[in-house]
Length: 610
Image (tube, rainbow, N blue to C red):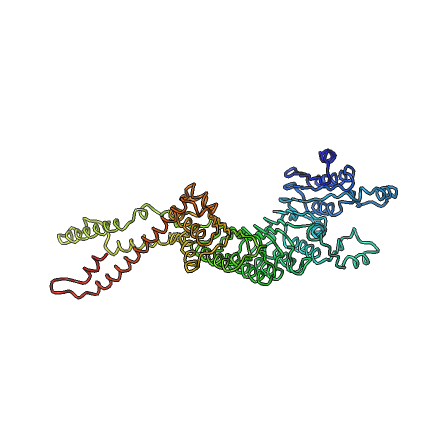
């Protein structure tokens, strides 16, 4: 099939996608497939043709030895797939024929995407020498111009040593130092020392960063943890771009999700991002063990690196810290500051532990960012779209289910009834005791003290059920903080688009009204589109979802919802003022007032005024 596809294709660039995932190829089958590709490319393609291959071979039982040979095949694809292992004779006639035929030297087979995820490359029963050979091969692959643009090694059992090998390859590639296969016995000969000296000379060319490895996916390798992350971070710190301002990143995408990375690994990456600004474009650290400490370290490094860098563009296009459950409002506030200062364009904090305080910090930061943008001319090289995703955090005000039926119906009126029953019961017991019938009534009737004790117990259970998310609505806190931050500012045309993800946040109708009010305020005062994705919230009407998601602040429906929220705030404010005044009067009345002879008291007039 491979040979038939190549022979039937035409044009200088041929793209081929091969998916043999879950085919139980093993080491031998995958290598045969690779050899077929190389030989078919050499035999069937015309002069100066290029073959670009996307090879997916997940879940095929490939081990460390098979992966090592596969990497070697890719690096040495121009050798026509012929292995030199065990060969002692050289066919001079064939070598001369190949040298005379220029088409063999002009044909390029490029493995653009290589996905061998879910293969146990470092199995527990694997030979240590084979694992070491695999590490050397992946180092050579990473530092080579013929490396795949996208390399996926998800859930392959890799650990810190594999990351160290990858890091060495990145460092050698981006510092202009090539030590190709210096540790492989198969490449040693009498002239190895002279060759090594020649290869150690810096040989930078402009295509070294535009070609080769650009995206590295290592998700699901638990063995990486902080040690492996630190090895990769050291490589990112040491590697330099072609130009002094590091305008070209070392990697466009680094995925370390689900790798047991903690605050130590996050701190190491923070050092790299600050020391070598722009070394990454996208960084995925989701589903790890990072806490507020690691989040603050990353935020500080990004802000300092942004100040250090002379570039107008974002230091990091995307940072994903979703499902790090120990990141709460404190960490979110720090990370949002990295977005509003221009260091990060897109931030994902889905399914963390962010509550209304984090939403309040977000609203305040966005308001200040719009004010800053209105005071200075925005750089033309910086994107006018920023994104922050807080979906899956319990931002809404939603009470938890009660623990029992008793606590579910336990209201103030119920407590009053119980107190009355207990009072009557005690009176009955007292009367029976006087006539010598105290034993007739059992102990089922509680004393006042026992009732009060039960009141306290149930009240404490209800209080323990209430967490931070039930105290205040995150959407209302978001609006309040945003409105307060822009209250004293003048209207200006900023033209910024801010995309906020708030899906599955337990929002009710009141919360959606608050979001609509925020969207309208940002549009009216700053001519900016605040696009809020509030899908999968029970209180989200369909029309509101669509208008909020598009940031259509001129929508009549959103304007009406915003007016409803402002009216509710006014009523709430009046109620608070009234309650405070009543509380002050009650305090005065409890200490005794100055009554006139006819029973008149100043409290009467005060009460009538309300």
